[in-house]
Length: 169
Image (tube, rainbow, N blue to C red):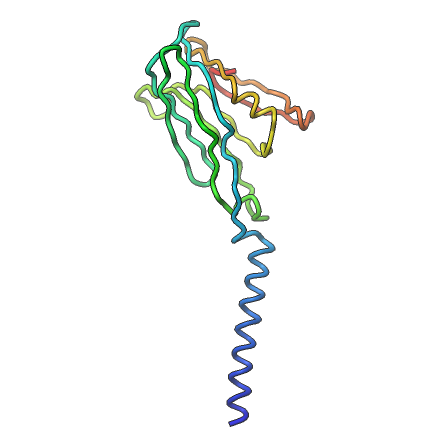
């Protein structure tokens, strides 16, 4: 009877150790540590064609960080569009094994899968970037111009830059 009791205690202690150790590893590696993660600061811009406002056009924002998150805006009579800040709850940033970058793709829907690229950027260091917030707060997008690639210095880290492709700057 005593050995059966010891066996039960041993099983219970073993389960407790395994659970505690597994939880500790999960916490260390960030598997269950969900936090708010900003996919995009608020975005405001004006859609133009040869300098003239484009009204009632559908602008799509696709944000990819593992999964894709899409929203859309319709330009007003003066060509202005707005997207609110977009964030998700995720454990990815706390996960030491995660090295995914964030892709921000904003395009004018024109019936093709890729649309007219207005803004395309792959961001690896962006958390709280005043440079990125400033860029996204006042975009001017002229679809008559061919999209270009721009290297924009990051004020918070002058040795780095954001590479942006599109018709907005």
